[in-house]
Image (cartoon, rainbow, N blue to C red; front, side, top):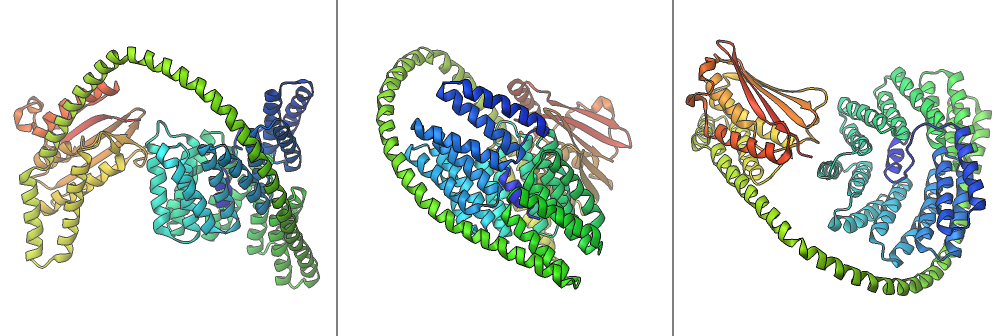
Length: 632
């Protein structure tokens, strides 16, 4: 079952929402139709037609949806409204894609693309390329799909457009489809950095991200990691009340359990997905879930259920005019009966399969004819758009006058703004001084010479493999310190990578006299959380230097999410020390002093809880609790 295609389509089809009964939807649509008959205002008519179409899009009633979008298209033509015309073609593309008419979807999205190009609406042009890329993916034309997505990126990247995340996720899916794991992972990383760099991360985007990450792990054979990701798809989709995301997550879980041979678990998740799909009347998902259940029961040799689910799937595909889905179901039923030796039923269903395939090919021919008509209509519209452009030029001259007046007013505010930025620059200079001091403290010459000396010792003792590993840790740590010292914030996962490298080098230097663990509570997601860099390492250094230097023991680091603050505890099982000496000079490093100054600036800048507390227990160890502000 093609769960990838469903979640991909959700990237641009705005179709999620709470469950609404068919009767409630029909009543709402009827009231809007009544309102449409009485209104005279063109803009209001366009808005009402849009809302009516959306109702039938949500319910999956594509015939009725198509009828109202056609009216929207006709009104746009009458009023020479290019923007509304492009929107109508885009909506027709959505219905074509959902009903398996991919060639028609390409024609509609292309018509929208040409109109948007003529209007020089670059954001809309990028959207059209994204939509085309998704349909080419559905058709299996991955080269064109990648080309369209990259064209969309080319437009969006210079203006830092919000939907870059969607492009990157689409590209990761495409490269996954052609088994290019390196580029699949590369675009997943870009998508992750794209959403964490924006203000706030929506639950829908998290669901889409974890779906792509789950597909990546699945392709690598990491089924356990894949299952964790798909469960997060369900979790975040529920948080957003995104029902189609929920069904997709459950379907993906079912697919992976089916691949693992855990058929009973697969059945549970397919049924959950089917039940919710029926509640929101999502035709495509219902037909595919029924097909999946039929195939599982065929594997279990339960003939009655296999045939029953297959017939229900066929009925649903036919009622929704899903020709491509109907073709796949008939092919499965024919093969199933042939395998059971029931050649009469196999022959009858194969004949029906052939007839549907012929219908699809005939529809392609009709679509080619329609494409010529669309090209002719588009040419006429381009001429009308040229007239609209002349009118817009006159309007732009008025806008220029307004801008000139606005600039004059802005100049009056310049003095206040300059004062604000001067103050801000002074604070930045203070932070930069602290960063440089911290860099010098963490690039401690004693630590560097000791680490290099230990690596050299491994090499002299002909232990080249371990020496190479530690040299890699040393290089990674050095690079991280240099890079992080120039950043205002970094991802928590990058901070943790640096900690791993630092601790491994200290273990080597102390001949593995201590062990360590890094733990998280259930809500911490290192790939999304951003914090100021290099605030944890000084406490880890102290724990090793004072707590574990002369005794075998254990170092524990634990991360806990406290809303807008990250709580970090660093514990060692050393000897501890007297509370009266906690603030003593013998336990204060230069890095700790710098930490205190940085914390004061961070508390002032972000107005969030920040600081640390030391708890020491004689002969039992020391625990430091650090509160670090999470940066949005």
